[in-house]
Length: 139
Ligand code: SF4
Ligand code: SF4
Ligand SMILES: [Zn+2]
Image 1 (cartoon, protein in one colour):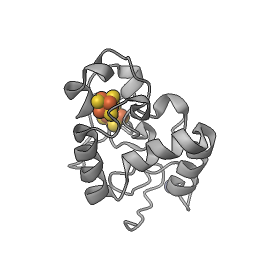
Image 2 (cartoon, helix red, strand yellow):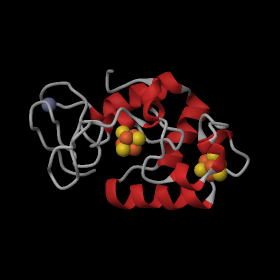
Image 3 (cartoon, protein in one colour):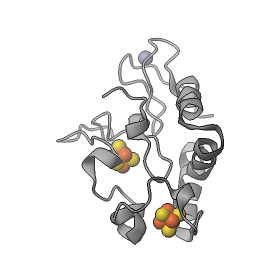
Image 4 (tube, helix red, strand yellow):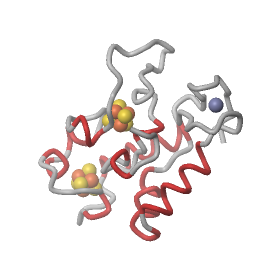
């Protein structure tokens, strides 16, 4: 599956196509036994939200912005973690999808994560292109 597609945008706003597990690697620099196929394809709780949210666990919600509790405390905690560690706001991603649409969001993800050296999509967790090895500084 290409790294930029609607199926890879998780209900929490994470772009699984930029996730280190989707590239088949671990945060410590190793290789995973099995590459993660993304939140929707795997249909299991990723690290955080599904475990804590019945609506997501039962697939009642496609994106968290559809939820009356949006943004709930669990999503806020995850968002804060992502903002601090990776300079990514999942809540902003969700608001962008809601207000500007998926095509716009995918194009903005391409602008943000396209490797300047080889044009492949880079990893948002270590700012590295697994295709050519290019590393970019954190935003
Ligand atoms: S580990 Fe989670 S965020 Fe990463 S690709 Fe898998 S489901 Fe998506
Ligand atoms: S915003 Fe709603 S659907 Fe998303 S994790 Fe929170 S309670 Fe669940
Ligand atoms: Zn590259």
